[in-house]
Image 1 (cartoon, rainbow over the protein chains, first blue to last red):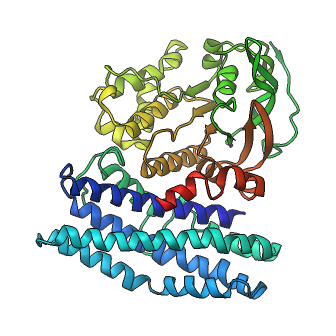
Image 2 (image 1 turned 135 degrees about the vertical axis):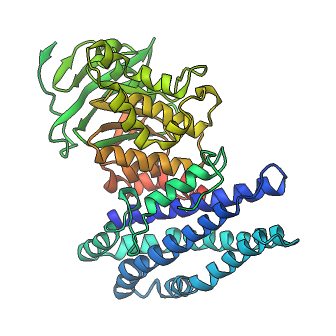
Length: 197
Length: 262
């Protein structure tokens, strides 16, 4: 099922970015790494532009809506997940503000950013695990061949393993590679600091 | 050697097989590490072999390459190799990126890459400069570090160098042994993105991985190797959706969910 493969793949991308930010926060907190504010901002931008604005709408349209049409068993969990999807702008705004505050040199900048990121990462951990543990099994159980064809077609045009390009021509594969290149070793290739295009 | 073809049921997407092995068996003394394993890699395909530690994955690659003695049949690029010999297989266009990378640590990045083209140079091919630029285009980080000693590079960079060196040979078949081993999630994602890009460029790949999730996401066809035997096989997207694979390799205890839970 291509839709499932791509969904898992996108979760992996998201989890990898979250893991990288968490690692950097830990190293900065321990005094072993100087913050690269542009890299942190670029990673937050990726979280906004890819999972929040691209991944979630696909889940809503090609997985959740058809599942609702097949069974009522998932209504409660889908209500929760869709509400979380709808809250994306507010969620990312908090994170962006925390990066800016940290970059401004505020005395509490690092602690504020760490707290905001921990909240974000904790939310996403719970969100993705709920999808994978509760919703995907129901999708596998209830989807018809027609549902799968619809979902596969919807997901495959946006497959990060084969290059993904947003309407504003932002190439997410290239953006991801740039983040990996700029992130400090051992989580990235250590070519930083991050430079704007 | 004789021109022949092995009929291996299963990987029907492999219309033009680059590699076919049939009933490959490897023994360490009285212990059979690999038993009657058969698989096919088609031209331009990514075929993965997943399985736990000790399943026989590396043994299989070593036998195909001719590093280990084996019984059975190995047909590479249409030619049956009765007894695969490593130098012969390399000369015919088979390359292996071993688990430990096996780079020359005191040599520069560029010298390591250049060595990858040695076999072609010896055969009279003089296109190494162009190939080097192609590798640098795929791995810009290697170009930035072309003069740096390989031994001073990070784990992710060394893995890219190992893959880049293999590509310098312009292989008909690229075999990758655990390319994600020991690497951070961000780099693993990048390595697998590059593997997908190699398929788009027409490289045929046999990928051995413990990271079943990542391997099944990128592969066309997959084999599950357990205790030296092929336990399951099928299109990668179907195996990824198989309850037995999910339970054993992709389930709640799997690396993927562990990563989400980190």
